[in-house]
Length: 363
Image (tube, rainbow, N blue to C red):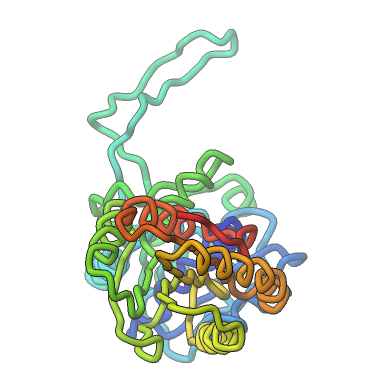
């Protein structure tokens, strides 16, 4: 599993995935260019997102939204509030969604705003400053936005071709055609938009901080457990300690297990069980995950023997779990070096790269 694919997938479907679990959300429509519709349908099916329906996007923003509204009307008999969000804004909390929905219910339309971070200026035909806006009087319009169904439907039914081709603000269309003034809510800084390539790296880090979750299974060394927790938590990675792999909570992205001997059959069985659990987990955000096995021996001869066994097993394991799970080994003969072990684990958990599948690290 490559985290870059997770970032792209989550930007396409995170907004819908995040609200699938909200009981009062009945249906979710994702509009996408026709050439990508089949791939998105597969993604929806893979993650068991039963509430999600795919609609073909239009040539412009407003045509896409209108297509989504019409699709929603065809799959949902009773419509009350419609929320509009962009896939390029994947970081949205349930509390924000609820606040917008409640405001839309009360006022007919609602939106999120943020302070301007740069001054907006107008430029004349000769590239000289024409005038600038007072930043204290204006805000940046963000997403999500919410509307009563009959209000947003009426606004789009009255849109002109110029509105569809050149318009960009849903709240303004509603104001223009229904005389409903949207209630504006001050939103959190997390509602930024993925626009440029550099934003993907920010999105990756932000999403990892939100979704990475590690299970520490049956690790007897309390000092090592403390070091692992410290390094992972400092990197904003959620950690839970478990006595057995049978107790795995939902949405784990990595598991760290302590092993006393190298038993390939046992390792294969454990890894297969984890792969099955993660594959069958409903609503899972990523496919597969990382499994890190810790081996420790204080005897030089045993160390060399374990190293040899792991090296021979590495290729078998990597080939057995291609594209689904990444088994990785860490071998150490010095229990005092818990900090180095913790740093290696933290890096592997954060990277989540299948490049390291079957690799043996010495700590």
